[in-house]
Image 1 (cartoon, helix red, strand yellow):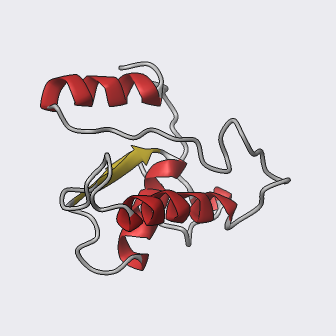
Image 2 (cartoon, rainbow, N blue to C red):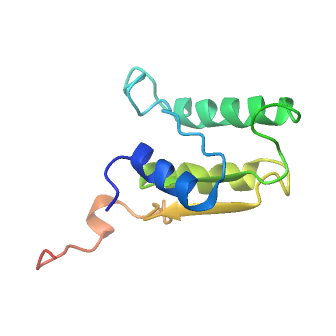
Image 3 (spheres, rainbow, N blue to C red):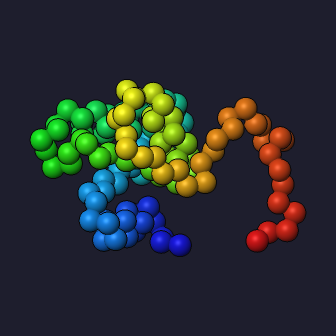
Length: 115
């Protein structure tokens, strides 16, 4: 729909005027598993949030933080929302996140007719 995540972030910025910070975490460009196994991606996200929270008078501000991503990154957004102190985030946006981690590959439904 919007291309890359950075394109989506620019669209949100232009449409709302919100400050949008897009970064790669351990599964992204800088680190590839298995060189950066779990919890490297979560640790990267925690580091970014900690930096923002440690600089409340800085460029980002801390009163209106939202977190969001797509797919596996969306699952990370959901996880960090429940592991950080309450009221850290004003909102979480999780696009097609993995939400049931109890399912194995054989439990997942198969799409018989691709869309």
